[in-house]
Image (cartoon, rainbow, N blue to C red; front, side):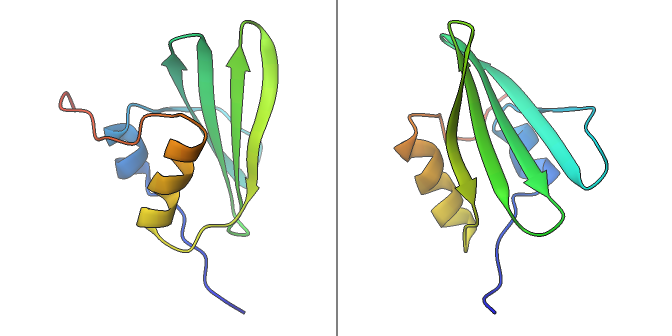
Length: 89
């Protein structure tokens, strides 16, 4: 079984995400975007879900696993989310 990477709370905060209340077994982080809100859900089993609200409609951009921080940042870019660290932390 290959190991999966999960972004740390520190990295997600540096990317502009804020932690929100979530059910047991998951952590939920969100940030505003130009046309809605971007949310990352991190599950205890190593999976991630990327959700986006655009003009009031929920979109599922990704559900699965990534192998490294580099792959995570590529994933963010692939769904047109900013992957650069915020200078105001």
